[in-house]
Amino acid sequence: MKKKHDEMICTEDLTFEYIRRDEEGNVEGITTAVDDVNISINPGEFISILGHNGSGKSTLAKHFNALLYPTEGTVWVDGNDTSNLQNLWNIRQEAGMVFQNPDNQIIGQIVEEDVGFGPENIGIPTKEIWERVEESLKAVGMYEFRKNSPNHLSGGQKQRVSIAGVIAMHPKCIILDEPTAMLDPNGRKDVIRAARALNQVENITIILITHYMEEVIYSDRVYVMDKGHVEMQGTPREIFSQVDRLKELRLDVPQVTLLAHELKMRGLPLEDGILTIEELVDQLKKIRK
Amino acid sequence: MLRDITLGQYYQTDSVIHRLDPRVKISTTLLFIISLFIVDNFAGYIIGALFLAAIIKLSHVPVKFIFKGMKAIYMLLAITMIFNLFLTPGTPIFTLWKLKVTIEGIKTATMMGIRLVFLITGSSIMTLTTTPNQLTDGLESLMNPLKRLNVPVHEISMMMSIALRFIPILLEETDKIMKAQMARGADFESKSLIKKAQSLVPLLVPLFISAFRRAGDLAMAMESRCYRGGEGRTKMKPLIYRKRDFIAYGIVVVYFVLCIIIGKILF
Image (cartoon, rainbow over all chains, first blue to last red; front, side, top):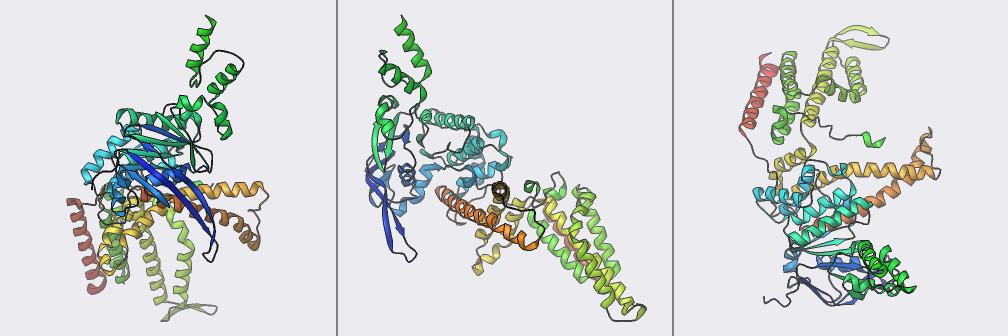
């Protein structure tokens, strides 16, 4: 089959509807969770998808792993149409997925066995499974915990084990569906650091779905979703320079960006979309001179 | 409080018995139990006792630890022995009120007692020296021939290992729900049996709902990691018989034959 799309992930007029049924199976109502979404993600990019609860971002993410199929439109993962069943296992191996609750996605009773679960499923020989387990646990910095029970790890550590479990399948792309929502600030930092390292060192495409603004600033591009639509897209700087628009979409802006925005409103000649404390300090110093 | 429960009661140490293939240990335990019920004289039980003692010695599990597990069956043991003692017909020795004690009664009662104690000791050595994981792996491999009869062997063992993985998580959750309900005035300490049963409802309903939600999440996570049943699956830790496993099988067969000869034919 000739590849139609060179992008890592590409959607065309993607629409997904949840159909609610009553007890007899009659249609009670239809909720459109994703509505006419067109996005394209290139290999090696670090993409964030932002949105508050119910904006359709998780539903969108499940399409990238062929866990859900579009009601209308098409999704291509590495040139493969997800609605074609023949591509299913290929897609799931190429686009790995990490979910929100770390407890509900670890299958093994020992860390290394859990990481080996994916490779076992795709029929990798025993010797190579061990090599892959070792290399993926090292990539997320969890190698010394390989013999531990997952029940004795912290949330951030469990989530890094889940990431290792995905890396062991040698994917081209990892979709992280709110991986930090249930973690403490330290665990959150570790998980994001691991994702960034994979993106920069291994050149794996990362799609991070989140509602924490601070996690977005390192991404190449950001999509902001609301009510199933893509409302904004651009670099983090472009997105965060539109503070008022973000507030309309009920999203919080990082504190530094907000502070810079307020200062600018009061007349300080600052640039738009300041993302880090260092940037703000630099600019303020320039103004003093 | 609930977190202290350990299941499978694996005793972590290194010994020959620990290193044996789980399949050897499962089939040995089975053969040992069968031998206990074939043998019906005391000479045979001496062999059994020697065999058990040798295994305990080899397993490096402290004897105290093994007999701790026996506490649970004291009652059962006492009841079995008393019934056998008084209700076996035969030549009476003395009569206690309306109950006759017979020579046969004493013999069967002691035998039943020995059988039960050996049975529990034997099987607890297996669980003490084998991790739950190895046990499910071993069972899957031993039940493999049943696949021809369309028994979903792989699925059963996968369910067992997932159940084992989720026991501590669900226990923790029970603890949490219990505290949450207690904070709202639920009474879990009532002595009355009916009240106790009633108080379980606000505990079990949320627990079941959450268990089902977890099951759904887990199924999705497994699918997204390409799980599609046992077909075409490779093993990270395949079970491979080594020299010591064959030696162990040999010893067990010799023990079994000896048991039959001494316990059944010779006396």
